[in-house]
Amino acid sequence: MDTVNRIFCIGKNYAAHVAELAHLGHKTDGECVIFMKPVSAIVEEGAPVVLPKGRGEVHHEAELVVQLTGGGRDIPREEALDCISGITLGLDLTLRELQTELKNKGLPWELAKAFDGSAPLGEMRPYLNQDLQQLEFSLHVNGRLRQHGRTADMLFPVAQQISILSQTWALEPGDIIFTGTPKGVGPLKAGDELVLESRGIGRFRWMCA
Image 1 (tube, one colour):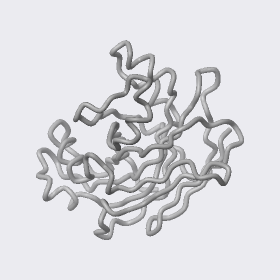
Image 2: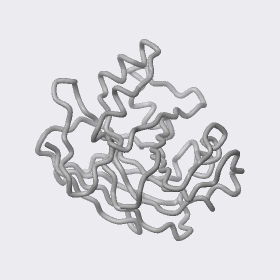
Image 3: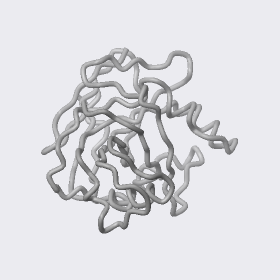
């Protein structure tokens, strides 16, 4: 895997996903959510996904992931895609009950989102100017379809995400972006087989422990 510098994550980027969590207080307000994970969150393909014990349900969130060549600050949206070096698929694992508790208290989400092993990440593939807003990807758990995403449904397209991030951080080579998850999130348990797949990107597999 290419060396990862920083992990940026975009939340609330698919309206249907926000709607499915509305009963927990997650609402669409016209803004995306930005948070970060440490590099220790990465789980490469083939390594076990070790689920936290005794901390409530761990939910899967399947996502398109892009890696950057850099770009610096204040990147115009029309130039943002020129900063992408690679694409893959990943999972943003979430301690859902803890996230809801933190959100309801107005506290940051790191304890629920940024734990070690919370970012299973497929092998990075070269970005060959594919239309990133016309991709489809899926997550199967134990052979059953759990999530099917269409990037055309993003509220904030990838280029816009890069531009937004660059207003706060000088983007550097190796930075990656988890671009948001579609509906269908749900709990995982030890022994589950996870398969992420997208035509033109690849197929990636993990086992939960």
